[in-house]
Image 1 (tube, rainbow, N blue to C red):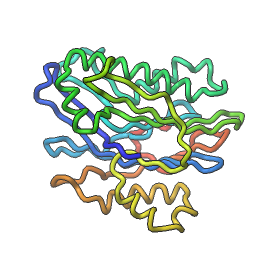
Image 2 (cartoon, one colour):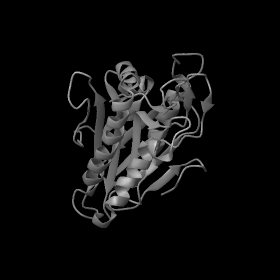
Image 3 (tube, helix red, strand yellow):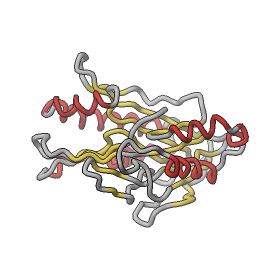
Image 4 (tube, rainbow, N blue to C red):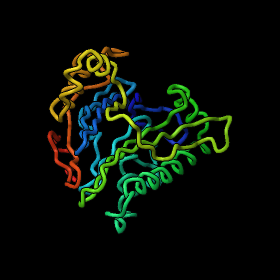
Length: 263
């Protein structure tokens, strides 16, 4: 899977748009744990670099979230209600369902609630600024944002990796749709820029057979070091954050920037 990560900031009329983009996320599910690593760079169209982004979001102690695409929206001079972040919607979905934590399929319940919230956000934006939404959708084959949810339970019964894609199609009603949370059969996924990761892993059978949190983090660093930028500045960079989610046990950070929440 491949998606470009973006952080979107626009004014209410859609003019003077600022877009931050650039994401490399690598995810691997072994028999007893999910491992995930990500870079930290956001790059605006004006060339401003932000290497402090937190692209892995813990939802409580037993669930993780990551998103790529146009993940955040903040219009200039906005009222607070009109700004949103995909990660905040993930936290809100988790908190709304916290009383059901430990139930079978809890991760899917949270993913569905996130989907409901983010589709509503995008639908309102598409209704008020259709040309603006269509522009960014066309640049990414109709995909607006893609998300990953990894979850377990304290009893060790489940270890779940779910994905949701949100897309836009002006010829369809409603124009904003989302797939149901889906668990893919494979155990290795990437979001964002991952051409180097894919090539490196494809050439190395040893890498495939020895994947752990160190190698997952190394894949992201390889993408940072060897990525060929589309412009003058690389779209990926900064520190690599990484964590493990063992079956039946809380999140265990391997690397984390000081500004990123631990749980």
